Image 1 (cartoon, rainbow, N blue to C red):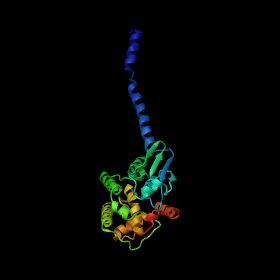
Image 2 (image 1 turned 135 degrees about the vertical axis):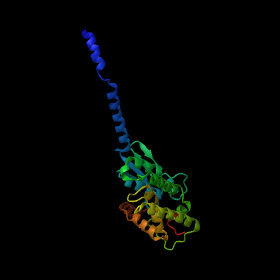
Image 3 (image 1 turned 90 degrees about the vertical axis):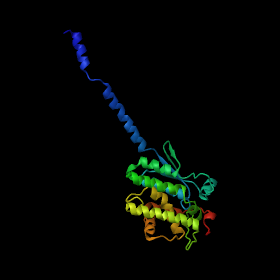
Image 4 (image 1 turned 60 degrees about the vertical axis):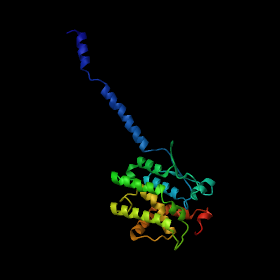
Length: 257
């Protein structure tokens, strides 16, 4: 056998290099996905009044629940656009607003979904698909519904109105909310709406707990205990303490009506 023939046969038996190349290019793709899910860039959450803004509270709780370190950018409530948001006169709620590096998210449920992707270990959504769908459904209902409750019982953490008269439309919203709470607490065992972990739903309904206390809404024992659980969270105590120290007042929300 000639030297040339032997060389050709040896070359033919060598493994192709394409398979090794494919494995190498797959690794950076996985790393890139992981980097996207776990951001390391500076995070800034823009909110407004801690006394009056229920949407600010929801976004702030979601970010705290997720474990993502962030800075607060607090806008004054007497700014005209923020005042319109708080008085339900704006066509679009502009807070909370989350920026993480070049990622910008400003809708509360969009922030919730983004944070769940960033921090799946925080269990903002339940692991079980059925429970996860349920959590999204009741969070969406809070996000888009209960207009009568919002207008009749606006969030005001510094105020207390004993024996407040709740009109029928707001009472219908209260009845629906307490039904949601009882169903979740029974189905998932509490102490939070979807069991042992605080979820998107708990952040969405936390401002309602403050409204029930502000306006002296009478609740059944199960729902009253759930309010106690939410208001006893360290994050809620921190938020309420800051709200009580706020200097700004919005006269329209500080009167009994």
